[in-house]
Length: 479
Image (cartoon, rainbow, N blue to C red; front, top):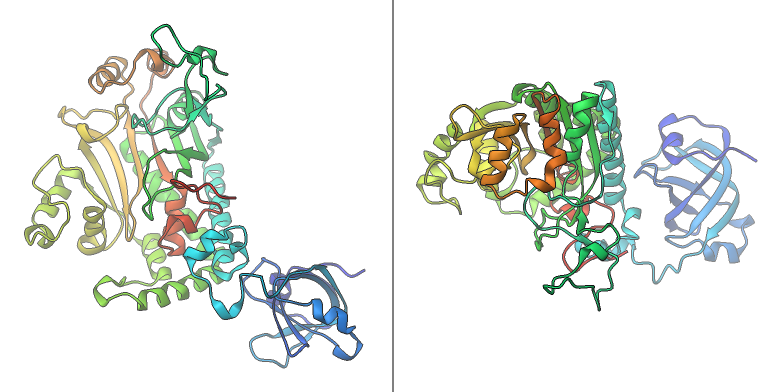
C-alpha cells in the first residue's frame, strides 16, 4: 500500500509522477468528478480527480461536503487553475459519511464568527479556525523553544490553590462538599475542614507566587498553564479560563526583566512569521476585508503583517508612568474631552484607551511603562526609593493595550510584610511565600503574558473567544 502523505507536503513539494494515499475531509465535489480535499495540515485543498466511468454510482452519492475519505493514486501535473499538481485517484474509500444537507459548514452560506462559536466543535474545519489554531500551536512551541534556549526550567505550578495571588478575590471554588447540606461550624459558616483538602481551595489565578519559589533555587523558571478568573465580564477581551506564561528570574532587576520580555515577544513573533506565513497571509487578507466594513476613522492604519513586523523590528519605547501621565494630560483627546476616562493627574489608573493612544498615536510603536504608583499595583512589587512608586513594568501593544505585566519583586522581608499589612493580604496564609525572603533572599523579577492576548494580536482576530478552542465565559461552558 502506498504511503499516506499530508496535503501540505504534496503541495509544497510540487513533484509529480508518484503514487500516494491521502486522507481528509471533502470541502467540495464538482461535476461528479473533482473533489477538493482538506486534511487540516494547510488551508489549501488538494484536487482529486475521479474516474467517473469506473466508480460505482452508490460510492459517488456518498461523496458529500464534510465526508471523510481516503484516496490512492498518482500525483500528476494539474491543468486546472490554482494548483500545480492533483491526484488522479485509482481507489477511493469513504471513511465517514456526512449528511450534506444537514452539515452546517456549507460554502454557500459562509457562517458568521458568532454562529461558529455555537458550533465550536466543528469550527476547526473552517479556513479561519484552521489558520488560528495552527498559529496558536506554533506560538506555544515558540514559547518553549525560547525559554529552553535561554536555559530556563519549565515549572508546573498548582492549578488548585489555597492562595489568591492577585488579591482580586474573583476565584472559582474547588470543593467535594455536598452543596445541598454542607457541614457547618458552631458559628454557622461552612466548615471547610471537612472538605477534601481540609481548607477552602480555588482554581488558580496565577502561577507567579509558586514560580518565585522555584526561581529562588533553580535560577530561572517559567510557567505556562491554565488560569481562571470568575469575573462576570462578557467583553471581547475576557475569558474565565485562559493560559498564562509567567517567567520568574533570580538576580534580575527591572531593566533585565524588560530586556527579557522584549526579546521574548520578538522571538515568538519572529518564529510564526517565519514558519506560518501562509496562515498569517490568509488571516491578514481576512482582517483587511473586515477593516473595509468599518467607518474610515476606526480602520487600522496598518495591515496584520505590517503590525507584526513593526513589533519585530522596533526598539520598544521605555518611559515612566509619570512621563506617560504628562503626555496624556496634554494630549488632544484629553483636552477635548474625547477620552471616556479623562486624565486629571498623577495617580490615575490607565485604561485601554490611554494605553492605545500612547502606542498608536503618540509613539507609533510598542511602549514599556515603568514605575507605577504603589496604590494601583500588587503587594509583591518592589517599592522605589521615592516611597510612592513601585518597580513595575507593563508592555503596551497596538490594538490591544497591555500585553505584559511584570515587576521586580520585593525581596526585603520587613518591607514585604509591611506592604501586605497595608493592603490587607493575610500574612499567616502566605508564610511559605515569605520564607524565600527569610532564607537567602535575592533580587528577583518576573512578568506575566496572557497567551490568548498574544494570539489575538498575532492573528488579528477581535474577540478572544475566537483564539481558544472552547471558550469559557459567563453562562457558557459548552463542549
